[in-house]
Structures are given as C-alpha cells and as structure tokens.
Length: 67
Image (cartoon, helix red, strand yellow):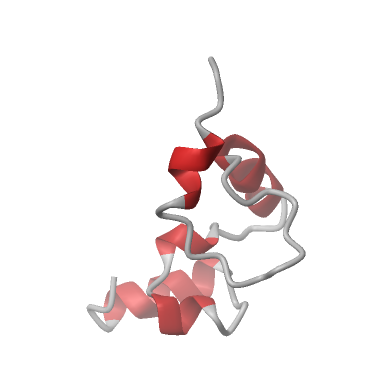
C-alpha cells in the first residue's frame, strides 16, 4: 500500500516539530503503541499539546466526555 503522507498531514495535529513520523500513520501508531501511548490524532488539540499521550490520559478524557 502506498503511503498518503501529504493527505495525512492535512489532519495531523502533532505539535512535536522534530517528529519524523508526521503523516506516516503506520510508523506513528507503531511507535506510540510500543510505549503504551496513542498518537496525537486521538487527542483534542489542547490535550495533545501536553505530550501526555498515555492510555491513561486518553481514558480520563473519555470519562470527561472530551473525546
């Protein structure tokens, strides 16, 4: 399958500028899952900017009806 990096970048809200995975979703997801994290696109922008991408942070946001 061909990566659609340019199209993916349009909806990527990752605020970590030196990220080498931006727009390459398969690499991003794989990278974060290894650390029990979710990628930026799973979080609202204000929550993403905290760089806490943990499953626990995501669960708290779900419980607060923010996701």
